[in-house]
Image (cartoon, rainbow, N blue to C red; front, side, top):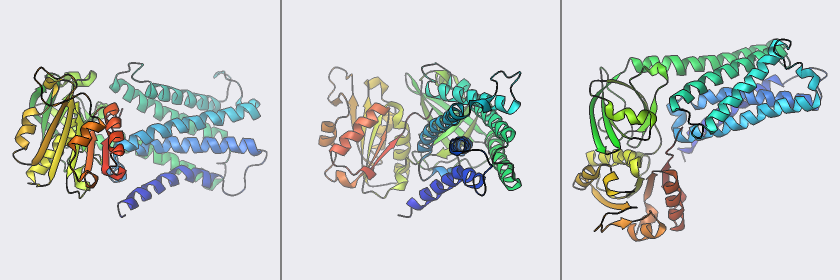
Length: 438
């Protein structure tokens, strides 16, 4: 029950940050001559800007705020709330367009008032942010280009929105309300300064050195980094970090990867990365001696959070990386509990950590079930997909008492979740790592 309290606390803080502008700006007497629909459009506009400003909090990677949920959940929440806030921005404009179109003035920026042009500019920025985020992959925008544009457009959009609100001067003309509005804008600015300047500065002062680069399969590589001049980061097995290579931490060229090494070695971390294009295709060319930077650890996908009589792991492809960290950590702790790993791959040649997993059997009470979609001739293991029938004949008799950790492509994870539900495994015992953050 205690674990729920931090989550409730952070949800309350989020709601307070979103609702505070409305409660304060609309407290007391309202300016005359507005009417219901006008006041409603103003309320929608303030709510939208407050939500968009708080979006920076969701992606600032405050570890205590992320811990009760997992940062992957926060990023999905960030995505959905951004769409909802954008809908409010459109509704704010739409209501005014219907009930008082004359107040919008000319659309020509050469003749329109500056604050109205700023509002239209903010709307355009938010349109570009939403379109480029929801359809980044169909538009084939490189991740790094998209991310820099995402940050820049959001900052410009919020700045223009603040100029628009200040220029309209409606509801903030009272000294107390204006002071609050200035404080709220200052909060946004300080948050951006922290995320884009202070945190990268700290990372730059705590560098890592690449000490090993080894191929695992034809399209996956492990990069090992070691802390240089500091103790490294203490992490829980199964967590991940943002890794920056061949760039400054100020350059916004970081990428999230699961830590594959044991939590018993916080000074030396390993990341196993599959070649999926863009940055990942350059990983095999990295050489020992190069400088790296880390921002982490993050994530709630960890066995340390659960006191279970045993664990079941279901991995697909490179989804084995965080699970490998858990297994290595449990081995270093000489954990005697029974463990089952169901590991799905397309081909036998694509099995990452094949030899390392076999060696872990000597150190753990570990059973491994390999599942191949395209098995070679003479294969005696499981074939096809990880199905309910496969799990039913593989899981131990006390399956309802165990905790399950799933990591892999989303279709596989969803199928396994459905299968476990059909097998009456309690929902609270199934923990999935959301594979795609961006």
